Image (cartoon, rainbow, N blue to C red; front, side, top):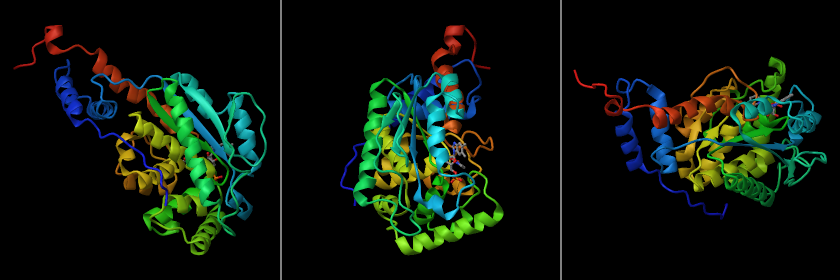
Length: 347
Ligand SMILES: Cc1cc2ncn([C@H]3O[C@H](COP(=O)(O)O)[C@@H](O)[C@H]3O)c2cc1C
Ligand SMILES: O=C(O)c1cccnc1
């Protein structure tokens, strides 16, 4: 079992109450900004601030490779992980575009890519050159799983020290919908076929094969449902562990976590299994096409803001949802009250 203890502060519900009362004095009918009102109340409780801001956002993209790709579970070859890391570093990926759009600080972390990548902007936290093929052996050792969480945690802290007011966790790793599906099957105790999806776009035939591979792997690896480190070690991935660690760092520091797609939500469930209160600091940004995502979201007890048919990862759904969340904070900060505007709020 993981020995690390995380001290996550309680939400300040009193602050939420005060913000709710203040929202009711703004120049609009009561409750008329719907979910934006709930969002900013929640942010106030997280940040313990009467006028919470989410600006500047921080985006951490963890990249790692997966030995399970040898089983033919992805529509793309493993080499695409490295190629996409270079694309991130050159500013050409979807997450680069959306990060620029929202003015985010973006960091790319090699936590387990199968090759060496030399680049001044790449953060090197490589634990190992990719996971082992968990169809045949454990993905990583217990110690490596802990190390990867710790690496994500310290990277999260570093980003927070740079002054960000929310954290988006993204990932890149060909084969990681297979690892995430295995993790979710163990945590949810649901049938593998009910949660596995097409990932990058495998055929229906390949999908059946993916289900078989995951079922066999779980049977042979026997991950312990109650031990998130054991699950990570047996069927996980380095980038998934990294996101888990960064989420724990965010919650400890009252930094809202904008949870992205299927893989990011799997990392969120592992974080919940390590320290249940981490969930208080999570905002579910969107609904991914991957069927397991709905199951993962409901296990977190959350509701997604957007449903745009995304199935990409990288943190893209969270980055695209950011302006909506920011609207909630600006509504609170900049709207006039009935009394300041001299408008009557009584019939
Ligand atoms: C060019 C490209 C860019 C991506 N960006 C994110 N993913 C996404 O797809 C991968 C997971 O799907 P699977 O399990 O089917 O391999 C992950 O790398 C995820 O981040 C990408 C995938 C590709 C091909
Ligand atoms: O929802 C995701 O995060 C996702 C879905 C498919 C492929 N890659 C990522």
